[in-house]
Length: 87
Image (cartoon, rainbow, N blue to C red; front, side, top):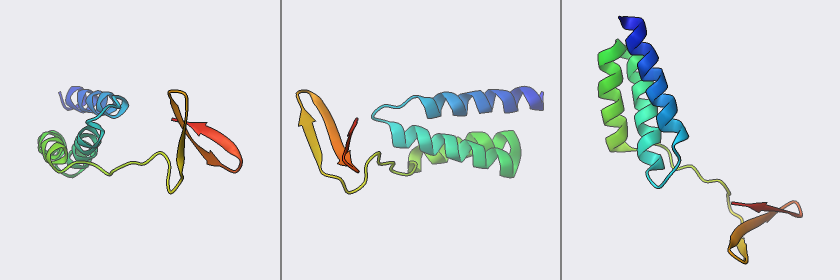
């Protein structure tokens, strides 16, 4: 039974981590909290850690740091080492 719960928690964490949208910090926090709670207190800790992580939020991830961004039509990009990086 423990293996089934751990596998389902791992699948849920992966699904939450791969769904990138406006709620990225909430999903990242839930995944980090569930993983940490599972390590510390097992399946109940995974549930509690996931809820707390969703409320607190995860790290704010930036895909470009300290770059000036430009637009090319409808696409946004920044220059790094003379190359355009679109996002």
